[in-house]
Image 1 (spheres, rainbow, N blue to C red):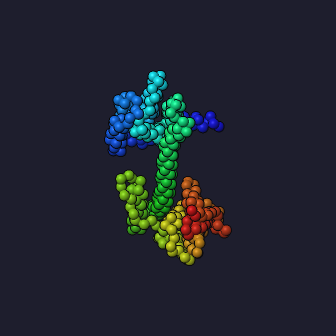
Image 2 (cartoon, rainbow, N blue to C red):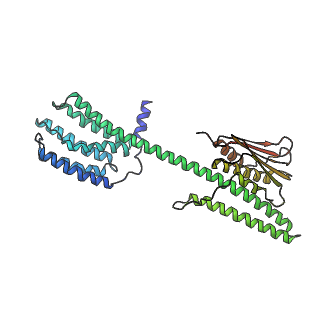
Image 3 (tube, rainbow, N blue to C red):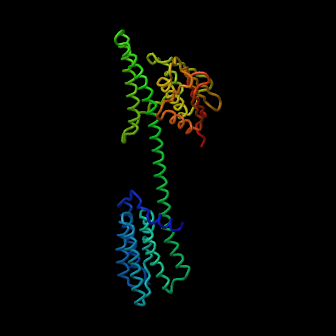
Length: 381
């Protein structure tokens, strides 16, 4: 298990979206360079003054590449410090770096924030070697050494935490986007299926009437034109939401009050009756729209698949806590009104997402019955 964890860390790719350089980086350079020069001039106990100042100024440049090349920046910066420590130990000189070089702590942060897993492991080993060489300095106590390790680990941990938070945020955004696309797909399916079914029925009626009753066939064509225009309008609304850089149409979505519109005649198809009763005010928009879409899909299925149906009943009743939708047709007993495809699955999923229940099956005596119960406030959070 530990081996698997190491492999997972080693295989972790670089974080996406690392900015090359921003104005803050140049501000850091403008602050760090003068700080190094001033400390180099004023500090009395500094060995190799000119070399130390030159090193401190040169390593400021690593800040400019710490996001795009985090391992290289760590290797150059801490490798230079290691080299200075080794030369000092060999020469018997007590060399201590400049306090103003504290800016190097930004490098372990950037390494764990932006670097790949293998870069983080290699970079951490380099930093530990640099910190470990300070043990050879007699002026440093065990507490100083431990403190140095903890400071490096703290900077690295901050980078890891920032990376985790950003990854979680991006995943949440992807999840939200996926849910929105699923909802749009469901809305598109419900809208198009309903209107296209109406167009198909009207077209069949028009073909039957064309030879004997041309005037009636012309009226059917007008109805087909109206349904097609309505379908195109609703499709453009949903497609507009998917387009980047354009504002979506903010017209209100249909709700329970619009279910009565489903009662308009569809050619020679079954008569549709709508009954709304009880408390149907103050519904959450998601519940309001879901009830309309469930009723719309149920009517579409009945018109398509209910054999010998003459009447479709839509009943919506609200009480204090729930709204019940029942759609029943008087077609042949046991005749499946659901058909195939995503209709029933989408309806059940829509109800479940709102914390409700959904059932569909043959009626007790005739036809097919759809029954959905949704909580007034939607799914509990």
